[in-house]
Image (cartoon, rainbow, N blue to C red):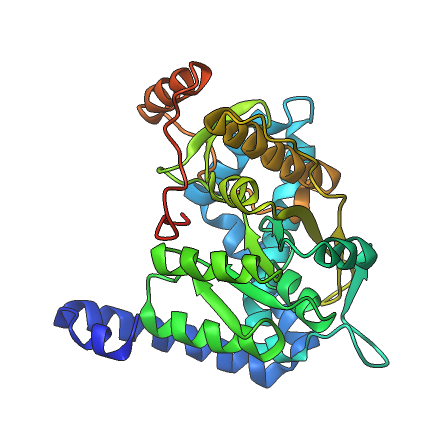
Length: 334
């Protein structure tokens, strides 16, 4: 949101955003003063002892884990949640130090596995979409890619607070792609342009979207954005799954997995659905590999009344009528 647009907000909204930003920047300033290593330690403590006790959010994580891993015991699932909270607390604290993460230097904090897979995909010239989920500190994937020479843009969902959102964008640019692409019609046009130039796009594909299509995730239909599948089919871009994991403290390993292989049949609706399922499957495999590295607090699956709506959409898809199309470059990436 621009400063001009922000000024047009109601007074109470501006007051609320200002108060939220003040609290956020006070914590960020505190973490900055601590230095990266100590800030991450303090963040982990906050995660385990404060975030973990926010019952309404943690109960959602427990429900999600029960559906995803019914074979695990309650204590095993609780260990996953506790480690997730530790990671979340560290991630928030690390926002104060995003300029310090690099794959270079004598003691790099970022490492890459299978970089050659990414370089080979770029060499094909049709553009590459690196997609991942909220693993470990999810800001690291575009950092690693940009520092290894993968030119392109990062897709992000703007924060509700425009003051915090502008600050976050500036922090991402310090070590990641300069091209920060907000989700929406204008962002989709920019993605089209970059992919057609053979560049890379970095995005997270693990969140619920009401405008999406119902595709299985851990055996249950979840509303999923069809945009990556649409773009891959329309432009012939490569889809590369990537995962990130926290090693010790504030050190991370990003892994590029083999590309998703797909052959369009000419039935666009069915092709988009099949490829979206493949994307969900790739993310699920990464989650299963290290469950505690994923952010389980999302409302990833429908509940209550939403389930009837999802069943309706799923029935249309089975009949080949999901109605998703890439009509123009103005289509929205949601």
